Length: 137
Ligand code: CMP
Image (cartoon, rainbow, N blue to C red; front, top):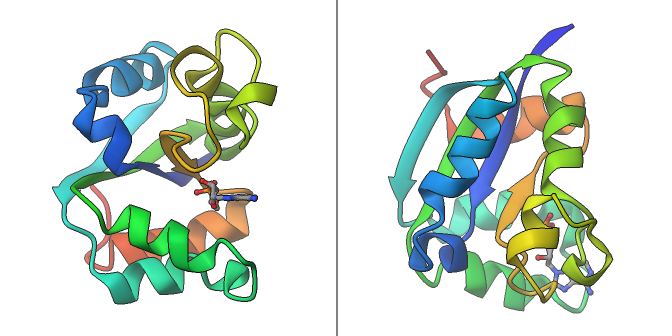
């Protein structure tokens, strides 16, 4: 089923000039970019985005990190987009990510795992509302 999901390219990915490489892989897969913005993320948006992790010990660090430099927020649409993107990005901890995935090829640490992607369609709907309140194209 066609659906839309959220990808964030984190500050490390933007600093390493990986916007093009990550977007290239998504487009080659046959998925469509239906929203894209380079931005300094408002702290309040990042805190809401990671609300489910509020009690975890890394919450402050992950919020600080997302606010440490520009990020790219992307809406990605296509058949089973959420699952397809999750598989392409690889395991959250890059040392467990398969070669051929974005994290398996380009990241090494969980603190700087390059990208965030929505875990399921319900999370995608919530996160898209946060990052693209104006809607997507
Ligand atoms: P992300 O998919 O953006 O969702 C939460 C983020 O917290 C995760 O990727 C990691 O970058 C970050 N993080 C930092 N430490 C941990 C940890 N111990 N377990 C899970 N996520 C962590």
